[in-house]
Length: 278
Picture (tube, rainbow, N blue to C red):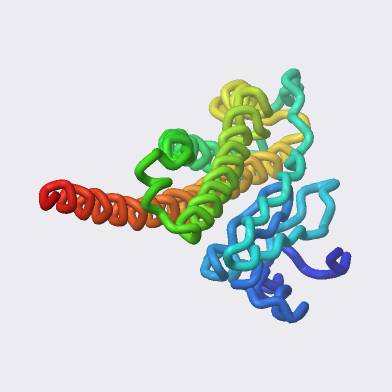
């Protein structure tokens, strides 16, 4: 649990790496960490988010941070901790009341700021959609790799090869589960149409675009900022998950299969040679 008075969401806020160092935990020793309901792969201590100031805790969120330690080499990989429910800002009422007067200079500034946040969010949604396709493609690759060894592979592989393959398959399953969580958050999470997106879109079209002031404008401005940051967090999580799955799932499995395939080719060559000289 973090101290309640510790600054967050400011340039002076400590980074995740600083917190780990204060606990005498090397960043490369953790598998992932979770904050504000989103889990992040440490990338063996190389994730640039480790050096970013801690984000502002969402209203009502548990200020604690979950850390999953990296698995011991050659041991079954520890699964990422289940994603905590994402803390969400209160949905803006769909029937917000317009103020029957011209907007003040301050209100116009807030409306313009909301417009900027929303347009940036729309642009980010396009990138999220592209990454969703990459996630889906990667899930398919991991699924096709996660198979039993065929007869030749079992025959010519060593006991160590078989252990390496079982370990690689555990990584494939772990990475698939991590990607599935990202896909679920994209499809039905806070920023999806099944979540709160429709409320933000309706409020934008009804009040922000025509620059009509309404009750709760200041709170709405804060909610649009949180929505945009939620998209940024989701995008970071998707990219991190893809990189993790590529390195520790796809490539690991391909290396083991390539090593076994070389032994199969060598074994079949020797077998053919023996058949010829008989």
